[in-house]
Length: 247
Image (cartoon, rainbow, N blue to C red; front, top):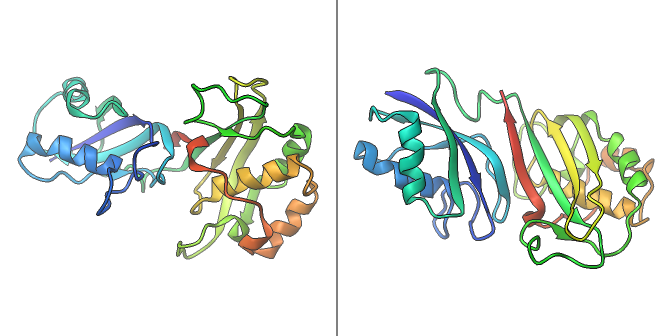
């Protein structure tokens, strides 16, 4: 049995997320259905992370076992020939037998994109959150700096999640200013792992700092509260991209 590693891009707008579900179309199901003819059986695909409905990926990573001897480059062409246009395999390679897309990962980088302008380009409405009111970017950067490091992020965890620990390490968190209706403001966050909706809840909270609801100094109290009700809104899924998985 060969262990294959693929890098996947997808537009999550019309998908129910990464994970196969009883209803709706998922990325995992599309890949597994496309791979089944190669081995004449169901091929189980493991992703590095379970992106939610509406969330996109620039470089999701997945692994699966395959007995077929097809070369990686030929596999890329074959899969892209049958997958829907919203999903594309951008690379494939042989991996060591012990490599696992999820359990071998040492971290992830996400991007959250916001258009902070009166007008939203029609070419971005599926890929960025439109926040028309002016935002104080320097206040957002100062607040973001308070979240870097190892903290208990329970205040930023979405409901419906059960984890042993809500402590995570955010290695970097920065904002890049696009500066226009067609150039998004981008929050880039790197961490060893993320709680359910954590990135979207951080983005929504920092936007409220930028709008003047809170100061940067209040981020410490929000973290210490360990209470989701203390942080801000959950930013919509269509602005979120899984940018890179680290190994």
